[in-house]
Image 1 (cartoon, rainbow, N blue to C red):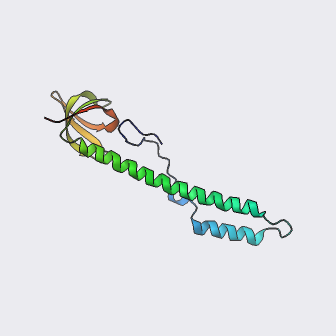
Image 2: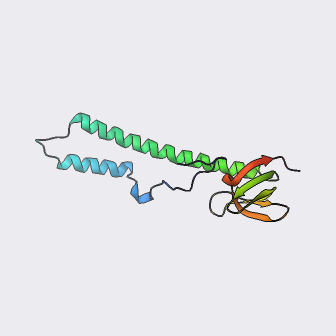
Length: 138
């Protein structure tokens, strides 16, 4: 997952669709079905069985941690954007360049977007990664 200079998560979405994840109940059903239909002359090795259980547990823990990290990064970028209200910032990006005061923060796309009022124009939908310098407001 990419993290920009100020803390906003990148635009790449690594989350799986809800129906792509295997729940613990579904895993147990698969496991019981596998045990029920296995060849009695060639049972699954205990070490292999425990390794599969450990892998499933590790994957589940990793998924939960990833969700928590994404949530923390989103909260961090939201706090940073709100903290820029009333401050002078220098921006450089697709929406324009200049120095001005942050007058608003919007969350239309789920990510914070700043409105920066410069002496010559008002820049709308400025991303956090476009902010290159932050100064105290007047």
